[in-house]
Length: 250
Ligand SMILES: Nc1ncnc2c1ncn2[C@@H]1O[C@H](COP(=O)(O)OP(=O)(O)OP(=O)(O)O)[C@@H](O)[C@H]1O
Ligand SMILES: [Mg+2]
Image 1 (cartoon, rainbow, N blue to C red):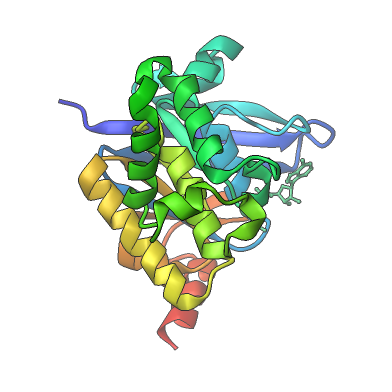
Image 2 (tube, rainbow, N blue to C red; image 1 turned 60 degrees about the vertical axis):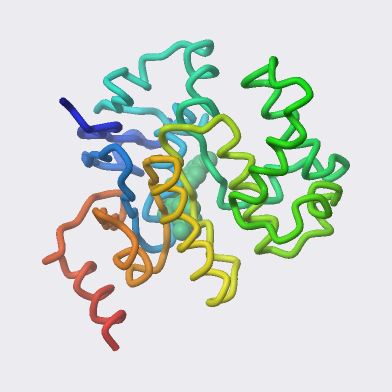
């Protein structure tokens, strides 16, 4: 029985205009079923590029030069538009670094989630509204009915982050890619979102790729940690990793 959900092998991504300066260089790691894999690195180290690549969303200015991404044994980089459309949201979903981009300002939170649910499961029918409220409760939104009726700008940063997680989870994906889900939150809220990730893994069996700046936080939560420095995976004995760990121990 193979418990690997995601396998990234030798992924090298370059800018189209500058093919010799890689954004990601020979990146390899794997994500097991129901595990949390942390990706940590400084600003510009390639974390978001890697996250987008996992969903087959390499930015137009970039090109995959070599390597493979296998999700449940299928080659993501070789998928056509229709296969990618079925994969995204349904099997792999992403919560974005910039939550405002995920929401249309004139659509309520509840309507966003209902629309996403309908896109994945048109037969939900009259149960859909209750399922939408259950999903908001799952991500620990305190008053789901009130929050469902809010427009995105009416929510605090922490609630918007949770609403985005609810949106990402609405089709019960096998893999959730969360790009810096807590960077805009204060420390107390960060801890609550981290606890929520543990609960989602436990209750839904979802595998999580968690991207963050903060090595200490990631190491407390993740089963495996991948450290990126200038687009490369570095080992724990690399100078950059040592500096990160020293900073954490201070
Ligand atoms: N569309 C783009 N066109 C050209 N270069 C880009 C583009 N997007 C990102 N880059 C460059 O690719 C590198 C990696 O960027 P990326 O956004 O993946 O880093 P990151 O680790 O997510 O950074 P941060 O922690 O600030 O979010 C950076 O040098 C960035 O300037
Ligand atoms: Mg980023």
